[in-house]
Length: 251
Image 1 (cartoon, rainbow, N blue to C red):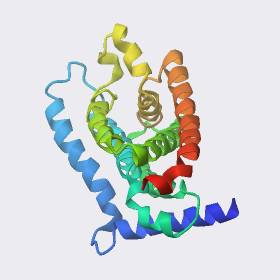
Image 2 (image 1 turned 60 degrees about the vertical axis):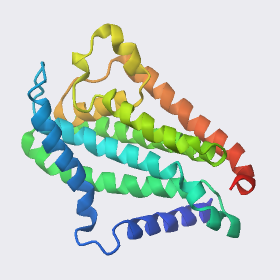
Image 3 (image 1 turned 120 degrees about the vertical axis):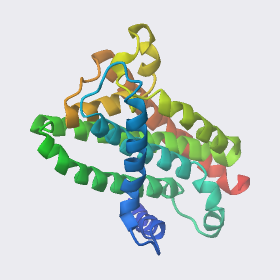
Image 4 (image 1 turned 45 degrees about the vertical axis):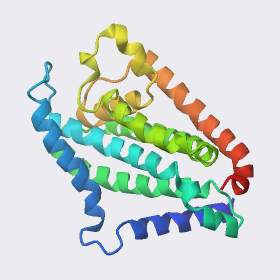
C-alpha cells in the first residue's frame, strides 16, 4: 500500500507538471474555460429561462467547474491504459495508478478553483458553515463516482476500443440532462425519474445548496443517486481488477 501511494503521488505530480509545462498562465487556464463558458451560456440562456435563477452566473460557474472536472477526467482516463501501453509492457506496477493519477491531478485543480470561488461567495453571503458540510459531501460523492466510472471505462476500452468514442458521445448528451444550465425545478415532476438515474444530479444540487442556498435534492433523488455512485464505484474496482490481468495480451 505504501509503495502504491508513493507511485500514485509521483504519477500525479507528473500529470500536474506536464499539463502546464511551458505555459505562461499555468493553472489559470483551469478557470479560463469555465469563465468563458459561463459568460456565453449565461448571456444566451437568460433570454430563454422561464424561471429566473438568482445569482445565475455563480450557479453556472459552479456547475461548469464540476462538469469540466468530471468530463475531462473521464475522457482522459478512458484511453489512458492504451496510451501508456509502452510503460505497461516495460514495468510491473498497479495499472489502476494510471487513471487514478489523472483523476487526482484534476481533483487538485478543482479544489484550488473552488477555494478561489469561496472568496466571492463569502461576500455574496450565501455560503454558511452548514453549507460547507454539503459541499464536502458533494465532493466526496463526485470523487468516488469519477473513480468508479473511469476505472470501468478505462478497463473496458483496452478490449473494446469503441468505449472511448462512446464516452465522448455520451458526455455531450449527459451535459444537457444534468442541472448545470437550468434548475431541476423547471423539469415536470413526471420526468424526475430520468434525473434520478443521473448521479451528477444530486452532486450538483448539494453544491448549489451549499454555495448558493438552492433547494437540496429530495430524499428519493439523493438515495438513488448515492446508491448508484456506490454501485458504479464497486463495479469499476471489480471490473478493472478482473480485466487488468489481460492488459498485456490486448495492448
